[in-house]
Length: 276
Image 1 (tube, rainbow, N blue to C red):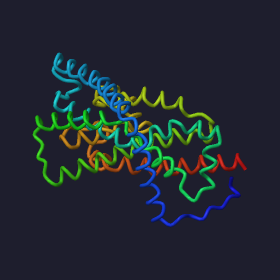
Image 2: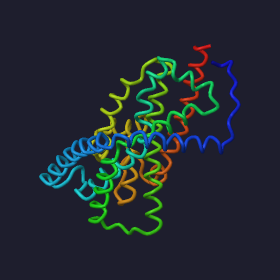
Image 3: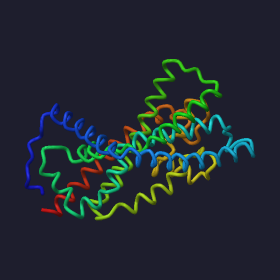
Image 4: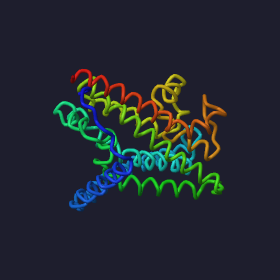
């Protein structure tokens, strides 16, 4: 597809198009409100059961890796809420990338005057994360109410920036997994591996061995999804990072988003070269 030259559309037209695609997707999904609500309820019960088991463990043993229940509640709530923000725009969309590539649907996007990544993201906005937002907000409020946090303008700004960084991290990782479809032909199986490891990010990183901690801070940066930003906000020490933790809590998401964009473009160029 390298021989096809597309004239870029004016930014205003693209923004209007993406907004229209989001509205269209939302209206389509809301046509089946009962199905959507049932999905929220089923997911909500699944997550609530997991969080309840963690609460039982913490109350039985008095803590987990030096974290009390209010601290864990804030950690779990932040993790769930930030993940949902990123997943709304990327999970369903990139989970189906291998089918789009294999069936030639993605190649159709390459001859349109739109950015393929943006079109995929905004045309597939997923509303199934309602229970994630409710549970995440509820846990954060519950935890914050029992913690000595001074919610001044500085802390609120850090909280919002940390949420955005963690959401970008989620979106970036799903983008990277989706890009594998360009070179491997299949990428869906990688999502299973991703979620097996993603479970580790729900807990304080300090409970893991040193080699696994290093991996979660570097190769698989799950530590920045909740542990690092929450630790900084509530004043708990961060192993390995030390004084760099406050900066990395905000910078991890944008950095990985940039790396994901470069990886996406590199894989896309290879796909175009193979396709001719």
